[in-house]
Image (cartoon, rainbow, N blue to C red; front, top):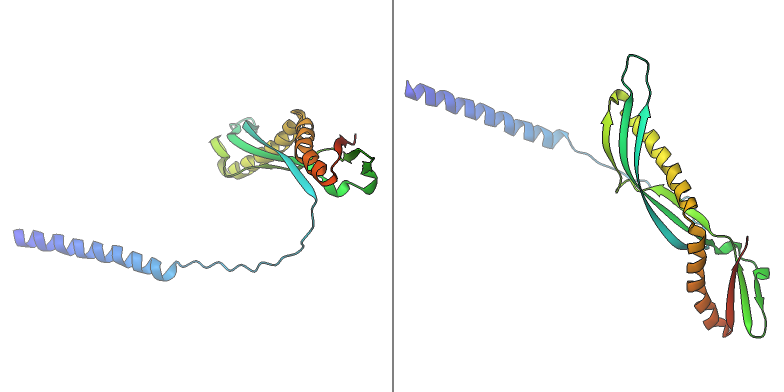
Length: 190
């Protein structure tokens, strides 16, 4: 009797072990992934942008999608990290923007502008989603699109232009002074 029970247990162990081993062997032979990249450089452009400010913005965004009377509203909460890069496009500086006298050089730079405004998806996350169902991905995408717009608007409202102008003066005035050997005045177009 004891021998029969031990034999049955051994058979069960061998069958289960063989099954598990078979699954791993099967996956090893069948589940191979291969990625082939065929990259092509489409265009290389010269850029004369001087990035002077990076603004990091954090947003807690709640998006609700209202549904028909009998269905609950879909809702998501995202914690969004955004980045805004602003500066001066030096390609817009022309010969008439540099005025030189005996003792002074005046350089008129273009108005600061925002170069890049984006959501940093590595630092952002979905905090909560309720009643999303099959449209969860669409709800989250809409929320991220709204966050991108809000990040840009927030960057515009906090006065990045003044910070860009001050940083440009601190960076460029000593450089121009060393090159010209004259006093340097940096102005900005309106």
